[in-house]
Structure formats: structure tokens, C-alpha cells
Image 1: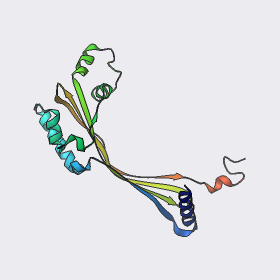
Image 2: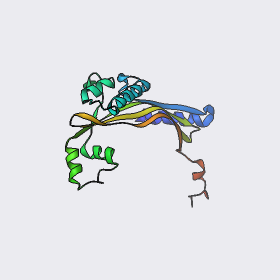
Image 3: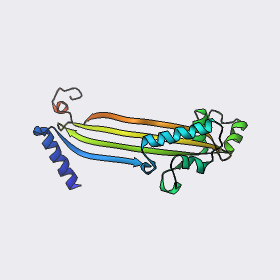
Image 4: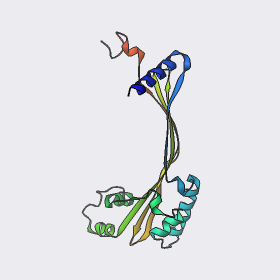
Length: 184
């Protein structure tokens, strides 16, 4: 903790006294990149969706292979709960809460969500007053819902391109002046 305080104090001093900005931290977040690039995964997904739309019965193993997932244990594949499946299909988990037909339909369904993330965040201290965050990459998922073992729905959700910058004030010099807004 001592070294962190020393580093932050030094970073503040450098950025306040002429160095402009100091890079503090770069964070890489990567999930399921071994399957392929974003473009490759999207092309594979679109081919799979076309097969399903054409009426082909595709089971879970075939669907994962079509996406380039050779061994499910080596990637992140999240199982969906009944409420998740209902939300994906109908837009909400409580819309058809008492409908026995929907309950019977859901009894025959399973689903998976496969996230694909490559996101980089670069955090910078600017002028000793602001913390800037630059974020780039992508964050999306493929959701597969199966009925009686075969794909019923296949959706791609999320953000295919992230490129955003945000700034937060961490210290406002004016707040320490008597008579400044918020001061008495």
C-alpha cells in the first residue's frame, strides 16, 4: 500500500508540474480468443444461422464445432437458466409466468451463451485532476437456444466495436476555495 501511495503521489506531481499526463494502467480483457478473430467468429455464426434458417437440425455439438469450438472445456460456455431462456425468447422472464403452454415449452429447452471479448482499457492521469479511460475492442456473445436437443434460436448480441473515452474529475482545485460552489 505504501508503494501505491508513493506511485500515485509521484504521478500527481508529474502531471501537475508540466508532464501533462501519466499512464497509470493498461488492462486487457480477453475471452475465447482461441476460437478465432471477431470477423472469423461472426462469419461462422452467420453460416450456422443460415443452416438453421434453412431448416437443418443442428445439435449442440455440431453447433459448437461450426463456431470453431473443438473442445468445450477449453473455452467459456455459459449455460442458461430457464429465466434467461424465457427472457431471450419472449423479452422478459415474467411475461408468461402462469401460462402452462410456455412452461411445457421451456421444459424442453436448454441454452448456452458464448462470450467473445477482446477489450483494452488504458487509464491515464491527466493534469493531476482527471482520470481518463480509453477503451477499445469488442464485446459480444452468441446465444444458442435448443429445443429437444436441436437449435431453435441463434442470436448474436453485444457490441462489435468499442471505441470510447471517458474522463472523471478526481480533484477539483476550485472546491478548496472559500465561496466556491458547494463550499460555505
